[in-house]
Image (spheres, rainbow, N blue to C red):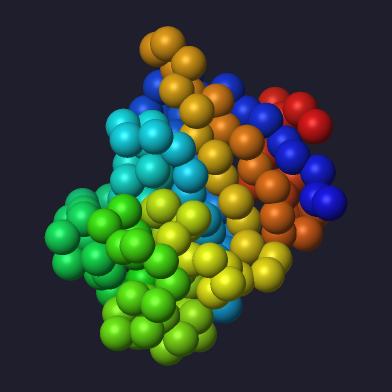
Length: 156
């Protein structure tokens, strides 16, 4: 089982910095699975990731809460932001273009709805609100990329 690294994210800027590091390390075929309760910062992470990956800090990144998926053409290739909150399970993903999206980078909020479609080797980012700050638990990817993502302040 992959090690889990923990990071304290004291504010939105720390969450955005983590997302920017993830954008620098991500490659085509990667999946980033974001877990946490409503308001934990999953959408904020995805927005910051997509802005950093596009090189455009003003990129419009609407929430896919109602559309379920938003696609982006990034310099490193296509990326897709999925919000699966309203789905009941993996059977509903086919019509959203899940298989085609897997050729690019996918960011998935509420990945528990993926079921058997959960990509092997995905980066799992669990955001846990703790008062005014968030705690992030990172697992998946290879150890070198995970540690690069976590930075020097991580704990195993």
